[in-house]
Structures are given as structure tokens and as C-alpha cells.
Length: 106
Image (tube, rainbow, N blue to C red; front, side, top):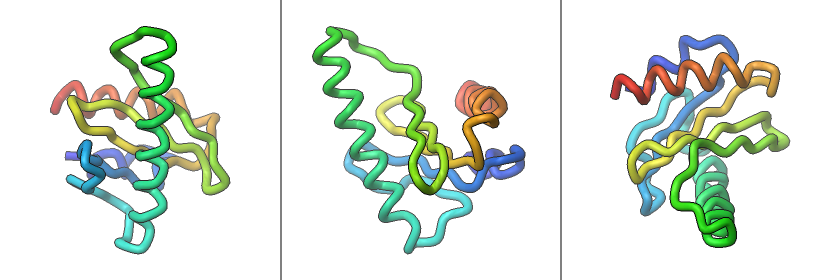
């Protein structure tokens, strides 16, 4: 399913992560690269949880992290999170469109 994202210009890799931190699916990532990416997902979950508590909001759409390795988009998919790493923030619109199209068809 998420393999389609690699065909989008600018996408470096993607991973679908379960609530317990296990990788459900990944593309473009080796096992050595998966560790640091999971740290981003765990940190993203913590930030989102804190914001939801403080803002008294139940849902969220996405979280963009601009880190040293390049931007990473975290998008909820049920109780899982889709991590999409890409080349530059200028590509965000194209990446968001591709992620929404993918998750809408899932």
C-alpha cells in the first residue's frame, strides 16, 4: 500500500507505525534506519497527546517535523501513524496530496 509514495517526487521513505511502535509496513528504509524514525513517531505521539490535552481537542490531521535529516510528515491512519520523509519543505503540498490520496483509498 505505502509503496506508492515512493513514486512521488521528493519522497525518500515512508513507514506505517502501530500504537505499540512496531513497524507495520515500510518502504525505502533499511532496518538500521528504522530506529531513528520510530523515535520521531514516539516523540510526535507525545507532542500530539500533550497538545490534545492542553487544547481539549480529540483529533488531529498531521504534524510536520523539520529535522536535520529533512522534513517528516506524520499523518494519522486509524490508530496507526504514517511517517513520510521527504526532501524539502517546498514539496509539502505535493506530499500531503499523495498521502491523502493514498489513505483515502486504503
